[in-house]
Image 1 (cartoon, rainbow, N blue to C red):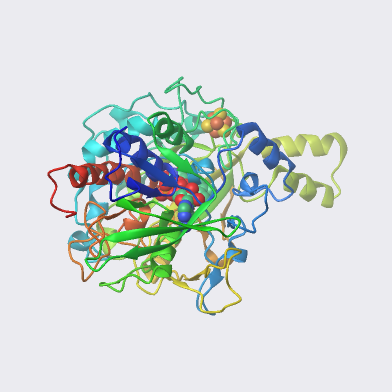
Image 2 (cartoon, rainbow, N blue to C red):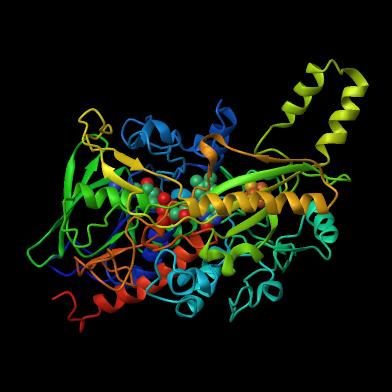
Length: 556
Ligand SMILES: Cc1cc2nc3c(=O)[nH]c(=O)nc-3n(C[C@H](O)[C@H](O)[C@H](O)COP(=O)(O)OP(=O)(O)OC[C@H]3O[C@@H](n4cnc5c(N)ncnc54)[C@H](O)[C@@H]3O)c2cc1C
Ligand code: SF4
């Protein structure tokens, strides 16, 4: 590790120890003195977190991750409606959550890692909707390969080669996770089905989950507890790279909430202000500052800092993938409740001319029966309510449970400036460190609604074609379910007037500030966001290394 430049405390200060911050730290460790500032606590013993989940009364994605000191200091938004402030009656509640803890939100992510497809980067050119990205699929292809290797993605290379024009230059590091029995049954029954002119086919879903021992972690044991926690770390999470970064010499300070960035006259971020849980403030200087605090907190921090906002877009264009589900009873036993929550899906509706009218979507076939929409206990309750008991109840319960099937659809939404985070002006709405809470405005647009309605009908057709019975579209409260895919609050683009960062993630207004993560996505695409965020991280890392090079004039 080299000595820091004398005028700075650190060569690089990274805000946030999630997957993007941790991978950047591991990559930059050899470039100088690197510090990660992480708002949440350190990585606890994994089994303590598993036990904490087991003990939780309300079992939601955030329940293992409560800070032992309580949520007083670094609020864990597992109860999103308690932390986010809803902006007026027109706004829907924003439901997606994240984890404040070293390792970040990959602790509780499902682990699906499809790439975006080429059309996702050029929605405006192709369909006159949303905006284009300032880069294309081909610009990211190599970085997608790096991201798949870093996260340990299992997938079927031959099956996905060329999917919707997405070329793959390298195989996945591991072969695909075995398909479940229900995948086989439905895959065979789909035979010959054509919907909207598209031959429907079940494809293996790429996932950051080991199909064999990889990178010192075991193969998946298939017990479906990935959200909120994989007890054996067969599923990738950000702690893998926090560990690698620390081994390479990076310093990590946890329970360190960055609350203000201060710029000098030239726009360079000069001071990084940090508050401890005890309320003690410290200031650090870094030659490069990397903001990797995820879409809500990264935007919130820039707003708290009252920095220049040339585009006026800091916090705007908040997006998520809007989810719905369709359930049915399969015509034959499919024996769910075994394997990761999903292993296969249908990707063909992620692109087509229809995107000029309605949103595209991706379908996942569940391995968990109706577990997401109703628990097995609901089946028993229905039967006992109908007066069915004893051996007849057992027979009927088994008959239903072994046939339960679910498709979930994740629908794209358009970037809209009114879907945004602002700082709550109400002095009562502050967190325990006295920082203003995010106030969120979030509406569904007609384009997404039309996509969701169509997705429901497509699932219905598929299940009916397969001989499914009791096919039901399950509508969530408020008309949508959150995917946990928080995107778009600090969009990338060509110009200072219409975007916050450039194609390398460098802030247009601050030459030494880089933003990592899905906050920079200009549109939300049709795949889960993390792999794309990591691919972009590798791109940003190259730009940061260039900026750190002694001959670089960028920072002087
Ligand atoms: C239930 C669920 C399922 C999901 N499933 C999938 C999936 O299958 N596939 C997929 O691609 N994505 C999925 N996601 C989304 C995925 O979890 C995120 O995209 C990803 O983890 C974001 O990584 P990140 O590094 O950008 O941010 P994070 O992992 O959120 O890391 C940000 C870090 O910054 C820290 N931080 C925040 N504010 C500050 C501050 N002021 N000072 C210092 N530190 C700060 C946080 O504590 C956190 O550790 C899911 C999400 C949820 C909720
Ligand atoms: S199914 Fe079980 S072992 Fe496999 S990734 Fe999920 S939690 Fe881990």
